[in-house]
Length: 90
Image 1 (tube, one colour):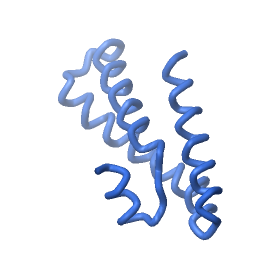
Image 2: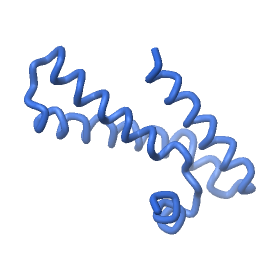
Image 3: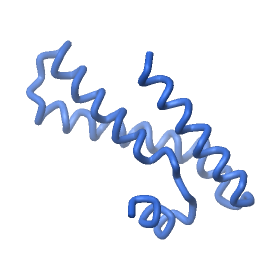
């Protein structure tokens, strides 16, 4: 359902959308662990950080492939998925 919603709104299949949720979880966790923030406040911090990251990704990667063939869009979003997934493994 998430891919369908993103495709309907943005016109691009973003396979990396769930990875942004994972990054948000990590931001909230590290805000709790290292900064001692309440998890609810960490969630708001996570929202701001991931929103900013999403804007950067939109302006640098997604915007460039919106008019490209669907195969290029898939390559970019799957590549982003792989990069974010491997960053979370570090």
